[in-house]
Image 1 (cartoon, rainbow, N blue to C red):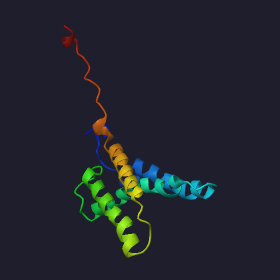
Image 2 (image 1 turned 180 degrees about the vertical axis):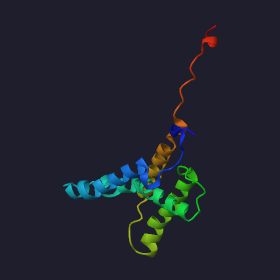
Image 3 (image 1 turned 180 degrees about the horizontal axis):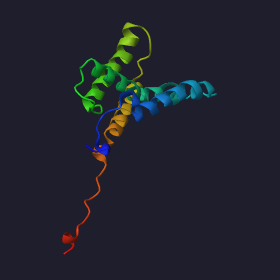
Length: 142
């Protein structure tokens, strides 16, 4: 199998994971503390958009180690969607209602789902990229 067709998922070495983790830490340590005006996006929703690309690779790696995941393929849509559903219930219902910690902000659900869909599209971008047409041979020109 050629290297460019390799469908192995890098988990913690995945570029989307690393970029999102870096963006999370930049927002947490540089942007939020230095904003002089409250920004709902940077103070709340930006990190919510990064939940799936930062957390899902780690969860999937643990599942792989526990042999609950059969291969090293990029995250499947149902894996991403199931985690978004579970995290949404936990962070937006269980946390605020049962643990009395957190806020049930429905906008966060859209951020979780949006970040998940965008990262899933990047993880599967090779499916959407068109391969170049085969080179024409001399016999095809006659």
